[in-house]
Length: 257
Length: 215
Image (cartoon, rainbow over all chains, first blue to last red):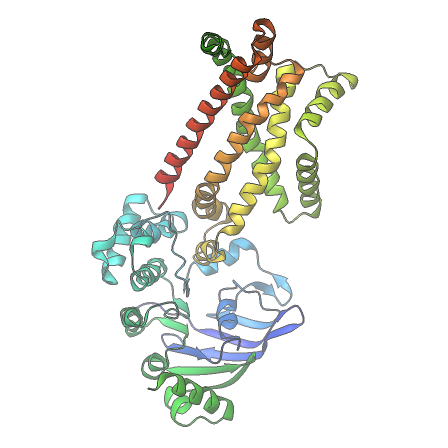
C-alpha cells in the first residue's frame, strides 16, 4: 500500500481574463480512492486538475492537500516557489501528450527527477528507474529514446517517471486521449494496478468504461460548474441532472456502431 | 586572357588573410553567443525594463547596416576618448550585431518547445535552474543549431566589411593583390573560392552536428 493524500477543493474560481473557467467548484477527494472528472470539452475538468498542483493558478477559494493549502500561504498571498516545489514533490502528474524529454532515454527520463529533486546519486537513480520501468512492463526498453517507443509505451514511461517520485497523489490529464485505440488498454491496466495499490488518483478522462469500472466516485463538470459528484452507478445509470444525461447520450451515440 | 598562374598564385596570400576572416567571424560568433544569450534572457524576463532594452538592442542592430555600425563604432569611439585598435572595433561590432540575431534565434527555439516539456519538470518539483539546464536548453540548442550555423556563414561573409577599417582579411587582401597585379578577375575569383571553401566546411560541420544531436 502507498501512503495516500486526500484533496479538498472548496469554492474555487478560475478566470482567464473575463472568461470564468471554474465557477465555485467544491469537491472532496478521499485518500486512496479514484476520482474521475468527466464532462464535455471546455468544461473545466483539466483546469480543475491542473489547479490541484498549481500548474494553473486558481483565483479564489481553497485547494488543500492533506489539509495544507496549495499555492497560497493565505488567501491572496502566494506561497514561496520553494514551498510550492516541496508540495509538488508528492504530487505526480501524467499528461495527455506524455511530455517525455526527447533528449533522454526512458531510463534517464525516470531517473532525472530522482537525481535533481530527490537528491539521489546517478547510479542509485538509474537502478531505481529500471525497477519502476519494469513495473510498467518496459524492462526491455530502458535505453530507448521516446521517439523509439509507441504512444502507449511512452505514456507508461511517463507514469513510471511520476510514480518513481513516490507521490501520495496522482493527477492524470486525459492520459489515453492521444493514444491509438489499441494502445489504450495497456495504459489503463497500469493505472488500475496503481489504483489497486491504494494510490489517490484524480483522472480526467473520456474513457467512460474506466470511469464506470475503476472509479470510486465520478464528478461531472460542464461550463466550469461541478454539476454532480456521485458513485459511477449513480452517474451512469441514474443521472440526476439532464446535462449528464445529454452528455452520456452524445457519448453513446458516438461510440456505438 | 585569363591567367591561371596568377589565379593560383593568389591563393597563398589570400589563405594567409583568411586568418583574419576566421578570427573576426569566429570571435564574433563566440562573443555574440554569450551576449545573445544575455539579450535573450532579457527579452524573456519579467522586468519590463529589460524586455524594452532587449527590444531596442535587437531592432537597432538589425535595422542599421553592419557597415554603417562599424564606421560609427570606429569613428565614434576616438571622439569620446576611447582609442581602440581596428581589430577590436571589428570583432566587437561583429559580435554585437551577431548577438541581436542570435538572441532572436534562441528565443525562437525556446518558444518552439512544447509548453509541456517544462511543465513535466515543474510538476515533479524541479527547481527553475534545473528545468532550464536539463530540459529547456539542451533541446533549444539542438533546435537552434541549423540557424546558428547559418548565422556563422553569414558572419564569415559579412566579415568582408571590416576591410573598410583596414583589417587585412580576405577581401582587403584581394583588393591589395588586385592592385599590385593588375589582374582583378583572377584575384577576386580566387577570393571567392576561399570564401566558398570556408563556408562549405561550415555547412558540412553543421550537418554533422545536426545529425549527431538529432534524437
